[in-house]
Length: 253
Image 1 (cartoon, rainbow, N blue to C red):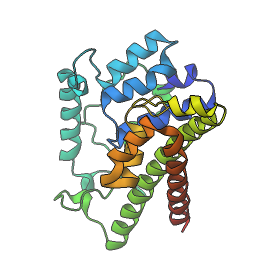
Image 2: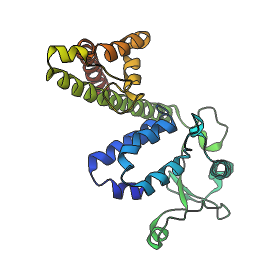
Image 3: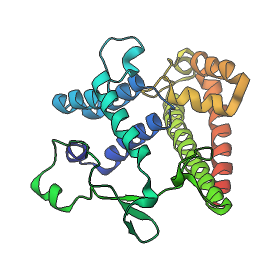
């Protein structure tokens, strides 16, 4: 990811790239949709784009199976994860209340991209000692009811933050369409149509934002946006703004 940060020097561009990663991590978009979203950012850097596709396990022309991770990578990650879960962290050397040292017998994951400075300063020994799953039987899973409330609150706030970002992105797209319509003559505006991207670059993100707000009526709203944007766009914009304002208020509270 350091190479991506170096290539995307503009701060807003890099943050938009990270938002795409967040949408994928939250399972809002698929792996193939992630590659489609980041393609405009990395199109000037073909080697970096190729690396990114390999990094996320994307395969060209696999029709939905592009979400399959190469078996060798999956096997390595599974082995590493299984070993980590087998460690009894209560018997490890502790550092304060939050950290403990990995056993010397633990095989460190290989990393070919590290420099001599990385090997000097990066931590491969001390790990956090988290409370994780509610139903897990591992000793690291024990937590108080107060910790449970804190974790749940953090999860909900992060989820709300992702929803807000998605809604704000859809608002910006529809505001651009609205301004474009205002510059047209009445005849041109009446003939104007939108595609599945609704004026943006993704056929998924903006439609999901609308489905989240309109529920069962979303297909009709999306159809109206595509066939009659001059009427539908202002109405959807008002609804989106009202929802965003409400969620921002709830978020601050």
